[in-house]
Length: 357
Image 1 (cartoon, rainbow, N blue to C red):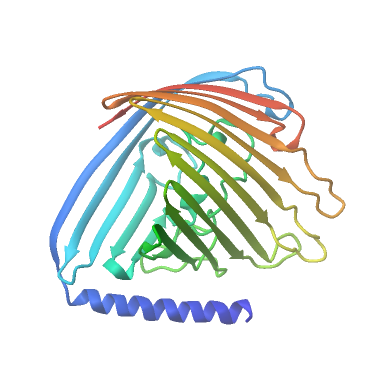
Image 2: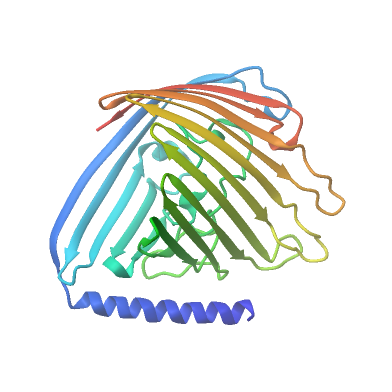
């Protein structure tokens, strides 16, 4: 089936599904509603010294403040369905000239009980993007403290905004819980359309995820595919895949994850793009108010045509946190070898104090 026919079918199915859903909701009303506003603020001191080559110019120190507000509202309908909305506002984005707005995350979710869940992802929040990096950590992801353009967490990035998820309920089988999701984005790789508007990108994307968990083990993974208009410089498809395994026993959690990014095949004038693959592992220990972790991720940009493969990039982080009520103290020491696939090193240390309110 060609992409045009496939897109037309998906559009028809989407319209039918939404029309049916709208009809069912039209005959019910909300019974009870709940509203809440929470937030957190964080002060971070960062220091980067002794960095080489690709990280040149990144040496320095600085203080930064990050404040977020979270708004939630939910209600139950007469038919037992639930409707909830969530919006996260990053207050620091107002100070960024290139900011697209304060909202860093916004979703509307319809819970249908045993029929599953439908979630509209206006800004981020898709089921696929939720598993981009699930390695255990005490503080932040390993790529948070590097100048390298990390690809290990790109899974779900093309279908995270302006998309719709269907998420199955968890099915129990022999002591294990099994669940899955499907995400469809009519404007893959672009932001959401405004309400009543249309997107400027006609290329669609979709993603699938699956997870099985029980007895301390969790196995999961997914695939994502985005169609792009073929030209002399762009690929016809972008495909991503990831898979992970976790095991938790008391205070200890260990995890392993692999990823593969296939940028597809460009036109003959451009040749094939360079694929990227890699893996990572992490271990975290949380006991009482303390938590510590070690994480390491390796990624390799492969050869493409006459272009040689880049040097393997290795990112690692040692982290620790201590929580006292609403206050958390954190430290993370990051190190990246060969950022951007070029011989060099980048090192960064972060000290933070955060407050939840």
